[in-house]
Amino acid sequence: MQIQSKSCKTLKLTALLPSPQNPNLRRTPFRSSISFGEPKRPYPRLRGSQYGPKFLRVVNSSRELIIERETEGDAVSIPQGSEEINEMEEQEKEGLESESMWGQIKEIVVFTGPAVGMWVCGPLMSLIDTAVIGQGSSLELAALGPGTVLCDNLCYTFMFLSVATSNLVATSLARQDKEEVQHQISVLLFIGLACGFFMFLFTRQFGSWALTAFAGAKNLDLLPAANTYVQIRGFAWPAVLIGTVAQSASLGMKDSRGPLKALAVAAAINGVGDVVLCRFLGCGIAGAAWATMVSQVVAAYMMMDALNKKGYNAFSLTVPSPSELLTILGLAAPVFVTMTSKIAFYTLLVYFATSMGTNVLAAHQVMIQAYCMCSVWGEPLSQTAQSFMPELLYGVNRNLPKARMLLKSLASIGATVGLVVGTLGTAFLWLFPGIFTPDKVVVKEMHKVLISQFLALAVTPIAMSFEGTLLAGRDLRYMSISMSGCFVSAGLLLMLLSNRGYGLQGCWFTLVGFLWARFFLSLGRLLSRDGVLYVSDAPSIA
View 1 (tube, rainbow, N blue to C red):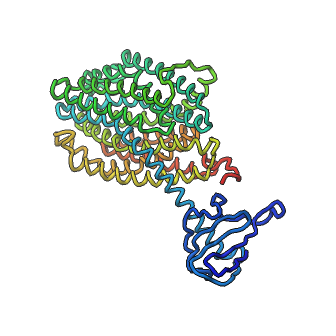
View 2 (view 1 turned 30 degrees about the horizontal axis):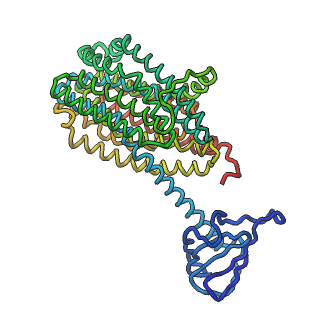
């Protein structure tokens, strides 16, 4: 490599680049996307270089490289592969990676900003119910425990619809097939409606039995209030599952603003309804259930309307063919096992807390609702992975190195969000527990598990971003097996600690172990050379 001097600030560097005549020559380290005479950005300072105080830019001009520097100099020769050239290459690589990561972080923030509000709205409804009911009756506050577990966790069971919708829609969009997207939305809306009517009938016929089996003989006084709450919310099941599909379709299109508007309106309706029905009209837990049910129906309609505005007919339903049903089941079955394992574990937590008495159950209800409210800050990161990763893993612009860089961006944001949310959420419950209950005994039980809550919140966002990446890569078998293993291990630990009298502290210690185990298992899988971010990594991908 030769540098020829001129009596000006421009030095001409002639580099031997690969050509059909000389295919074995080393490839230039500089990106061909930089056009001649149009530098993209200042070239980084070459520290301690004897060839000039600062190189300003490098431009690829077919067979030549042009380097400008600030001062004049004599003709010099820089050997190919020398320390200076290697340093220039390394600085260029670091600069490009830094710019790419910051660009990804900005894109993630733009998407997750509205998505945070969207995910907060759901737990916010239950938290509003908890705060309003807690001011009136400790018995009804305790009844919200099994009531919300049955409603919210059964809804969470159908998250396989959400994952399947986001994955299929995002993958089809990556292939630039709009007609296929419309067909998949219609099929999934039909499945969501069918599942919604099934859950409505299940609630009417078996809701009371499920609550009785869950609450146990020691808490029969809670069952009437809890059953009232469950039966009223059961009317919204068809709307809830249709809304889940419509929301996930919008997210698969990388649109988080439409669902946010719908859920913001729903949260406002729920809050106003709770205050009016519970505080002014004295309807108690039934009023909270009616307010939540109406808000869910309104949210579902607004989400479907948002899809219509994007050019997709959200009111068109299509019965799936056997092959389409098998494809959806192939995605849904492992996700169903994964979600069921999570739900079963959280249900066990409430079950063991229920056996410890009304005060402990009331304290656990406040803490678990606060945890759910704070932990949803990790859901947008999971959804970001499910919306953005398919394009990099399967689309026409497939790029595994960029997918790995996206994961680094998600991990950085997740770690930051976990520490911030964990600190703020724990401090709020420590300083202002009276917002949820005036009962001093309940507050004392809450304060016993504050450290465990911080440890749980700190790891949740980054663990969710890792699991979202595995879902986007359709590494579903590993997800289902690892989650089932975590559930079995955590369930045994929970039984052991409860039998030895560790109380609510034992429950929350087990929750911390369950979350950190998921984090390490997901991280290990993603770093594995057999993982979705490395397998079939074609050398031609830049």
